[in-house]
Structures are given as structure tokens and as C-alpha cells.
Image (cartoon, rainbow, N blue to C red; front, top):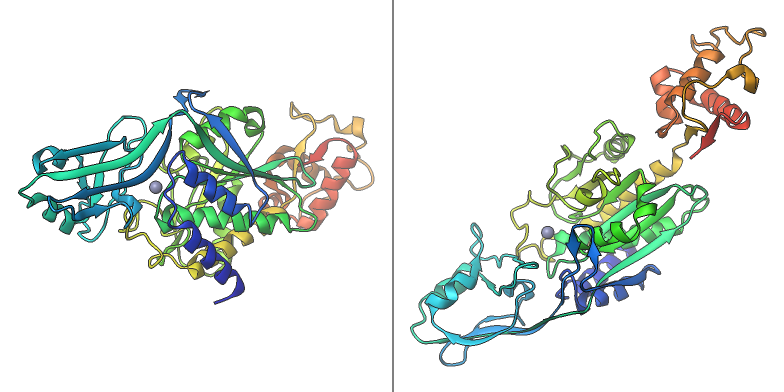
Length: 432
Ligand code: ZN
């Protein structure tokens, strides 16, 4: 085991048991543990806060839960697995027969051994999730069953973590992961840990070009709250990565951002090809994770994801079998190195945009229109300097890398960079 794998392994084991949800003390505990890796700030959003079309719900506390038979024998026990209790279950302390209990019991449709993962955040309800064997055991009970959920739903707050890492450019790249899942390793603990380790990698980069906004939010409601509270900054962002399900034993994959032509997708594909791994390409889809918020019309951030066993796709998804036997620190480390490669590639990009994007630049006014002196001669791989200048001004949209532009023009990127520098000097372009 490498040093990084050993370190990941220690954090996986510490964080796995915590009963995270969209709110609650275990989320704060998770964020405090992550503070050992990176100096993130923990923010609280109070219950009742309106965030666009949503309202921050009551905070959930769960202390214990069980179902016991007539002899007091626990047939289902929260202490064995926190997945046994539906997240956000309200409190119960009752004695009832199977008929009454049955609507509150959930089992996995395919996997007999698995405890499924269920939530009821916005509808007051309670429930237990069990294996097929436990279901059969409960069903055959003749006597009354004691049903206890020792939980609390009351005003509190939603917690999230944030770290802003400045670079030479004020242009930010968004990294987001979700901290709301209880004891499941691939979805989403692997993504949370990878994000923290990647943040540390970014913070240690010398001469960092881009600025990074890195957030650890409960999925959906947390991302929505973050957008609402940071609307102006989020509107300025062009590229985002949602990091989740990165530690399974299966194939790598990546999900395209909503605009398939956006350069982020090509950069990710290049990194995966250069890493010499098999991978699956997923198109953008409206189902998924917090790209649903960040890519909404108001923000329009092109958010992509790299996976190792993507959510929805692996058998153990949203079940107790998504555990530390399924996920290993070695697998998380493999995806981490691909994400680090992606950051390196993004850092190496040189991107420019027009100082004034409206219509053509009047080249002669900036001393850029030189008809004499051979400026119109096709000396650059069949193109004249004027031709390259016009293309460069046309394609420098704040998204295209100078090397991508060079490839489009079949020109030399070093020559194009020199021309770009000249256009910056003349005030026609600005580096992003
Ligand atoms: Zn999930």
C-alpha cells in the first residue's frame, strides 16, 4: 500500500460509520475530520431559510432504532447498520403487529443480502430497511413487535464546507461533492475524500493559474443553498466538476457536461486516453448529481464528472453492499491520480478572450493591420499573420485553449502564443 493509499484508507474507515444525512451532527463531524486534510470553512444555513424554490428543512438527529420481538430480541438494529433506518425518519415508540408495520419496511428488489438506502426528507414518515432474511423473520412473528426510532426533527441548520484557493487568474473552477450519504463507500464517501485530497493537491501547486471554489454540500438542497447564497460568484464560473462514485472496482467513466462541445469534455477524454485506462463515455443526462443545479440556466456551468463505477450503474448502488469491501483506497487513489492529471491539464491551458467582444477589432487603430512588410504572406503553415490574427480574435472566446485553436488552424501553437501575446500587448485580447 502506498503512503497515499494508507492515508485514504484511514480516512475511509473513520468516515464510513457516520450516519450522514442532509443535515445533522454527523455531517459536521465529517467536515471537521476533513479539516485535518484541508482548511475548509464550515457554514451553517438555518432551518426555514428560503433558497430559490426550496426551504431548508428541520435538522435531523438519530440516536437509536430497533424492532424487537415479543421476547425483546432485536430483529433489526440501527447499531448494526445505520442504513436500517430510513433517513429523516420521525420518532416512533410503539407496539404493533406485522400488518401495521409492513408498509414501513423496505427491502432491496434484487439483492437478498443488501439493506437498501431510503430517505424521506420532505414528507414526514418513518421506515426501516432490511435484508430479505430479516423481512421473512419479521413477517413470521405471531406476537406484537416493539418498534422504536429515537430521533428528533427540529429547527437547526444545514452544514456545508467550502474552501477557496486563489490563483493568478480570478477565473474560478468549481469542484463539488456531496456529504449527505450514510454508510456507503462509493456513493458518496469516495467522492468526498477524493475531493479533499484533490483540494490539498491543488493548494500545493506552485504558480497555480486558476482559482478554485471547492464545496462539500448535501446533495440537491445543499447545492441549491450554496448557489442561492453565492449567486454572483457562481454566475461567473464556466467549468465545474462534481466528484462522486470514484472508488469502485469497475471501469472508469466520464459524464459529459450539458454542452458536449465545451472544451472540458475533450480535456477529460484526453486525460483518460493518456492514462491508458478503459473507460465509458456517458452523455449529459438530466438525472445525476448536482450538475442539475450548477448547470441550470441561471448559472450555465459546464459540469462534468469522472467515475470509477458510476452511480446508477453498479449492482450495489444505494445499498449496504456499497461498503469498504467494494471500495478500496487503492481504487480511490487511481481515480485521484486521474483527477490530478485533469487539474494539471486544465492548469496548462492558455485561454484568452476579446477585450471587447462586439464586432471586429479595427486592426489599424491598434497597429495590427500591416499590409506591407510581408504581413499578408502565408508564412505560418500556409496562413498569413493577418489571417491568424483574425482567427485568433474570432476563436478566443474565454473557453478555447490556444493549442486547440492552433489545432483547428493547423498552425504552430508556439507561433500562435506569440501572436496572442502581441494581441494582449495591443489591448485586443486579455488572458483568462
Ligand atoms: Zn446517492
